[in-house]
Image 1 (spheres, rainbow, N blue to C red):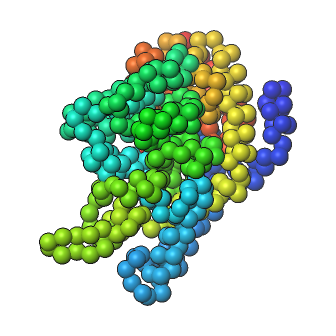
Image 2: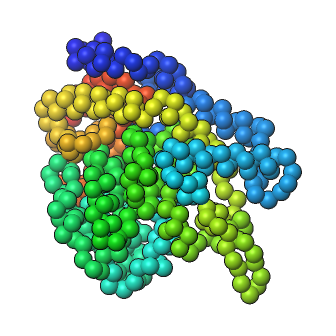
Image 3: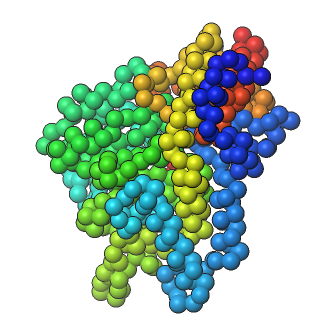
Length: 419
Ligand code: PLP
């Protein structure tokens, strides 16, 4: 039975048809240790609705062949569906053109593509790359590899105790050697939503291109490439109710055209002789080899599904979960939330006095509750807060208030066992 706060939250969210939404996700019926699954590890990977599963099955059952290569019926159907998926992603992120969407294997792959295709061509010895303390390792390590190879330098934007970027410091980091900015839109470890529009505009005033890691933003808030005006934007389908092994890189057409391809092979060429190869136009220049066709089509179905609910509705519902969970966890003696930014998505990283995060995760699992424990591939944030790890509950639109209550009861149970 939910308490009064929970009822108030539910009432204000009455238009959100939770029962219908949850019925779309068969995996939510899973029992763990005989108890109903409470899945709060959505920042790592979200679950897939039946509509996306059905789309994958239909593709494999009736539409599969290799794409771009033949004139036979199935190849034309598969090519058409693959390109339709690209168009769905284009609309989802409001990119100006379809050819600005490159299918990759995910966020990490997209960033590596930009590092190799843009960074190795345009960043030289002594040049500076600005990153932030909030970056996921996948937006740190590739740039470090490049810096090492080229003799470039990485500059880092600090954060305050709430986990918010220090924008004044960011602006002061620019000088005439600054050649690139890599910026996380929403922190996976803390949930902070960064003021990226302002940061992109500032970088552009200095003629510096910006890559935005949107892995934790695209599943929760509407993102608009034309409004943001970033040069690159990247995310993975599997955090957005889609399949693993597929993601996207948005790049401004003029920037993508100026870049070298990262991978060579079939499908990315215009012509090949042993003396010389000319490349296909974008987006194909960056899609060498047979792509994960089924996954791309499933990605298209996933953004259709999210759009049918509405990103504003999703954000509003998740915000209610965030505020309710924040209030309840803050009230637990010995619990501390890391990341208290004014603008946040529904991610709660917390520590419990005297209890290791891995023990918290293990005991919660016995209650059927899935949270992530560890450094969340964001060790610089852990170093900033001087902790080795946290426990992280991350919510999706299919989570409900009773699951927050289950988490709170689970945390109290952990404390009873260990303290
Ligand atoms: N960037 C952020 C902010 C993330 O949260 C993640 C995954 O957790 C990644 C990048 C890497 O995504 P993937 O493993 O799908 O490439």
